[in-house]
Image (cartoon, rainbow, N blue to C red; front, side, top):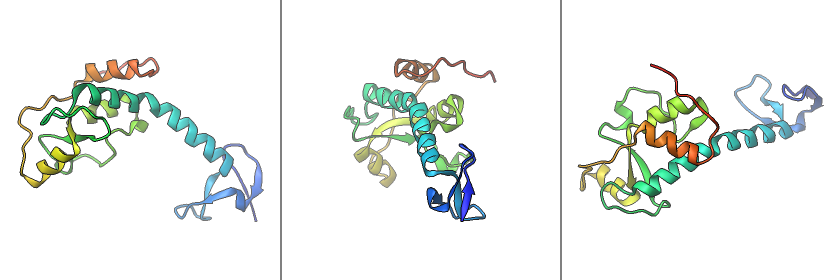
Length: 155
């Protein structure tokens, strides 16, 4: 059996395609080689976003205990849990929808270390004086991390 790749337009054996149960034929529309290229392009696009978040988290530190080690720092929706925001769930640092949605989502977050985050959810510690993200700081960190030129949308 053979299939045509939507990206390189080559007719290839079905073994050159990754399985994908959501497609009618059970295989992804791009061959394995093209899928690898797509994955690398996405990673390269997302690097400045991720670098910006890590840089900002290192500078800010935990809003409860002042921990600065980025390996244990997390993002926490505060004061309203994400489940109550009424938005579709998506990863906090997922820039695939663009910088506007990325920044809008991060503005609802505070930086908190893993221990304080778990304690906050357990109710044994409370975030009382958070330092929340601001769009200006995040855009600056994004540019410092090597992000391409960007103009924020109006409205």
